[in-house]
Length: 475
Image (tube, rainbow, N blue to C red):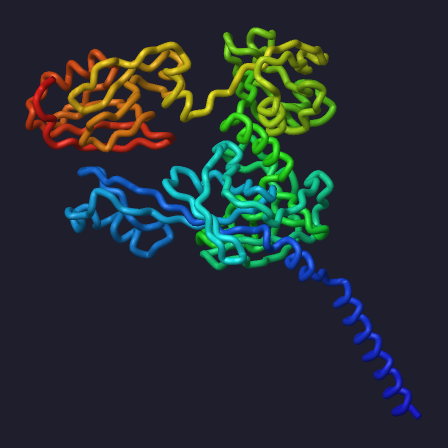
């Protein structure tokens, strides 16, 4: 009897466990229909950049994750004296079609500085794409191919995403087209170092090099983000992936499509997070807002009466919960508009009116702003075969040093490009700062035609040395 009872109970237990397993299986998400409907709108993007390698400024024709990169970085300066002056640097990424006539969203870093962009569809057709605009601050780019009747994605609302919700990524990791990975939303509104304008969606969906620019879908088959970054110590996936919310990407896209660039607001303050201790000392009921650590006296906030030690609680009626909220809110405000800042000062809240200025893009501020500022380029081509112009006071302030701007390259043997800033000239070990076009051209004029000189050049966010062997006859 006891034996029969034991068998009966065991059978019931096994049936219960089996039913529980089946129930759990039924609860697991099925992505097949989503992939079938949306996968065709995801594209592979390959880029080619023609890199010029000047003497004394050898650039390596390897990606940083290539095993040969570190070897040649350490030992290649002597091992490669005959490296060609030009080579092709290729890159891979992903994107997705947002309109049937060929508009595609991807990451800025996928197409940045590319000389050729090729889009491959899932039906194996390939198209050369035109970059209509790219925004470095949000890492969003808009490209266009000449085609019609293309499949498109559906767009969703990332504000409705919940932490723990299932999401799906489709892209081309390591060039493997239409790879599908899934995970959950790990966090929302995530701030990353040096990324002040995007409240990232954090997921644990596997994202690797080549996934950049691809879509992040919710379970309704709607794009809620653009896969952009990963946190990794190895260079590969480690469970921390970050996507740009699609609503922010579409706001950027609208400006890129209309103007080819993005205009952002600024008010001229340096801020920091409000901790519990700071909130107590300022008489705030809870930690919130952005503490003003520094104010530009002649900036919009300074003129509006904002003071160091103020805590900004609201901007244009939008609450500033944490300090990282303020740059995003201000950036999306149209330059030239009047806004209200609510600040906490000496135990009371008060409203101030500010006229929002335009945030200058780094490249435009240094490399192209001379055309807008009224500065005229030096009409003569100098001994380097380039036309230079003086930096404005604002440009020098942004650069943090003196320099001369390369406006145009005519017939130069030096690896210089329009937008470069020459910071200094080095002749026989003596470095002389470039303070003005007149002073710099005078330095060149004194040099022998066979002289070898080196230039310290600022290009974008980096600095590099460029060596020119033989200047030729003095002009």
